[in-house]
Image 1 (cartoon, helix red, strand yellow):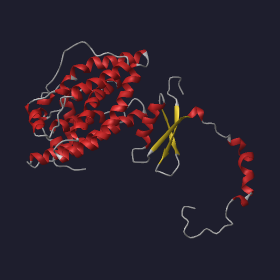
Image 2 (image 1 turned 90 degrees about the vertical axis):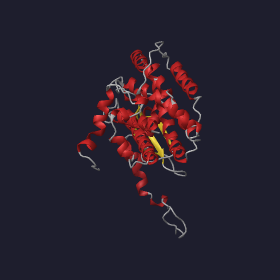
Image 3 (image 1 turned 60 degrees about the vertical axis):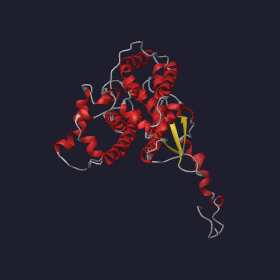
Image 4 (image 1 turned 45 degrees about the horizontal axis):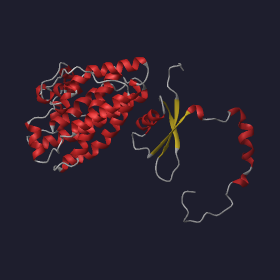
Length: 242
Length: 95
């Protein structure tokens, strides 16, 4: 559950950085809306994770007071916003996975998770629609936009494999029906990604170099900066509320 | 306006079933699909609507304010066009 929550939290925080800095006013609001959806998801998921843990930590404590190695988000999501193409590719690769994930999570034996998935799915469907449209338009747009989105994909593709990282934690949860069977998730994701990339006339890099580690708490150098922004208030003024 | 700027779109939102779409503002977008998405993001964040129309502003033809004398003034003196000579029954709402 931390993995789900941390994904939303870190990507939400990253997108939040763009508030007031979007390429145009309309897109600034669109990205900030997505950021708010993600932070909302993080709140519900982390609150519930704290409840299940039963150690007196709520969502805020989990979000603001863990150490870097205790965060389990994907490396992809902590990568910098870069240019607009980078932001869109990062979001698209993630949305294409999140949508089928939530579709399956609705069938979880855990009713709370199922409810969170149902609400989040609606949000995520829109995110995927929006980022798909952008990938197509940038890819099939001008020479420069095509070049930039291809470059963004070349840069970020190496983080995509980690999306389907799975270990004994996942296997156990699947066995108990909390995490529904996710075996077909990768093929659905590949189908979405490939069909949008074809329409966008961009190609998946042949380079097979892959990064992973986020799920186990091993992060890239960017993570520390995100956390120092995210945690600053709680660390500087412990227990402050606003 | 620079030549590279996206076209302007007028946004109309229907707030609930039975009401008509109302002009709420305008925005820029590269095409109709994106205009709809931008309208959703800019104008319906607080549950303002259940349906959106977007129309490229180029296609809106407006009356000229200079013509307002001949367009609108003649109707000012025709009070008999208002249905004010009827008693509205108590049960009728929204009049």
